[in-house]
Amino acid sequence: MLSALQAKFGVSMVVANMVGGAVVFVFLGFVLPRPQRYLDANVIALIAYMAFSMVVGCAVSARAFQPIRNWVLGDAGTTEHDRCYVVTHARRQALINFCMWMGSELVFIPINLHYGLQSELDIMSTIFDGAITTCGLTYLMAERILRPIHELAFEDALPTHRYVPGVKSRILSAWAIGTGVPLVGVFMMTINHGHRPVSIAAVGFLACVGLLTGALAMVFAAKSVADPIESVTTALSAVERDRLDVKVPVYDGSQIGQLQNGFNSMVEGLRERRRLHDLFGRQVGTDVARQALERGVHIGGEQVFASMLFVDVIGSTELAASRPAPEVVAALNAFFAVVIDVVDRTGGFVNKFEGDAALCVFGAPVPREDSATCALLAARLLHERLRDVRGLSAAIGVSAGTVVAGNIGTRERFEYTVIGDAVNEAARLTELAKSRATKVLVSSTALKAADERERRFWHADGEVTLRGRTTSTELASLHVG
Image (tube, rainbow, N blue to C red; front, side, top):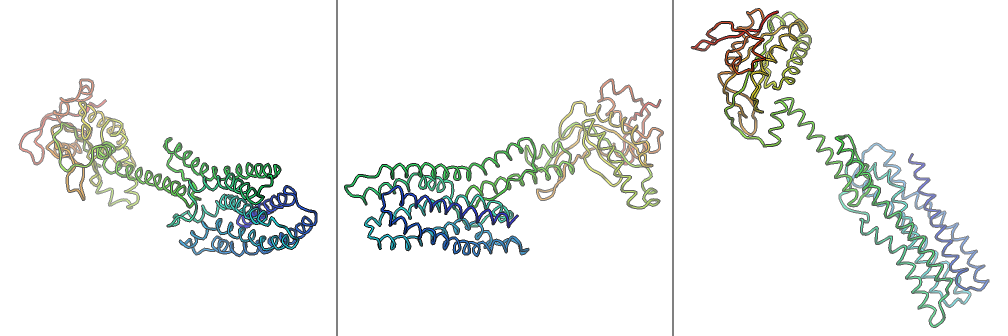
């Protein structure tokens, strides 16, 4: 790839300079009136100098390109010096071309003076104008051809300083090449010819050259701005479609490159934000995460009516003692996958895992008038789906009541949790449920708060004084059969 790019670069520079030289020669030799003897001498000088300049120019250009070749083929990484050298190479090549053009002044002016040519200013100004125009176009061409090298150099960072023309400078340069230089040529030809009439052919020729070079310069300048902006707008459309895997190539060392690089940084920030949002949601639940992102984090809590569902694996101690650790972890993960799925589907969230148990909350942080109904529905579904998950079974307890829900801790480290009698009651009911046939017990408070349709699946199951409490709790069990 590098050899092909270098060959394309070299051929483009040679062809552009040959075309520029031919245009200048045609103007001086044929458009402006010249005796035949001057034309013959200049033809010989042109052929000789073009051969000389091609050899010397190609050798100097190859030597100037060698550090880029060494950097690309090496494995030492990209330094700031490498980026600076790459981004300034188009300007360096334009300077090499300009020196070759200025060298022709030293050849053609003495030749024509030897033959007694009195309008040597024609030659000086025409060659100089041709040099400015050709070198300006070769700079724009070189910058475009070297984009793959720039993209490789700017993969990690942009140069710390701006070394290339910005948008304004490029537009002004295109105007100068296409309009300014030809007008200067007409002006120089006018003052040089004194009272003699200006050649209509010369003016027409300069106008045509100006139109052609101006069009080429504007195309290159416009595309140097439009192409990267189009790549950014295309990537923006992908981001709007929720695709955050896009990345625009960065191949410009001006503020356009800063735009490209800034877009990539923005998308990387969005990807990081999504990863954090996803991780945050997995840790605390999507509703808690969404509330924190929308309202901010506030330490403290509020009293809400909510329903608690506590689910605990039966015989986890024996499980850990009889099976290898990886198998135990895999079984628990499969078990809790069912819990998370059911609780999510019924409108609650898993607040925390406590070893082989999980506390699920309905009605906080998002208030729900039907929290008890949702909790009882979740208990019924879990009873069906957790009967035998990789040899595991579970006990379930459901309670409801007023609890304090909020962020507990400090701003450096906090946790969203629920505190209250209903939480303790749900845990105690789960312990008691392990000895019951259905493995599910709910408090009468939760049952009374549920709607009529859900209450049909449950029946009263006596009273009991739970561990750590002084008052009795009315129980309800799931209908069997």
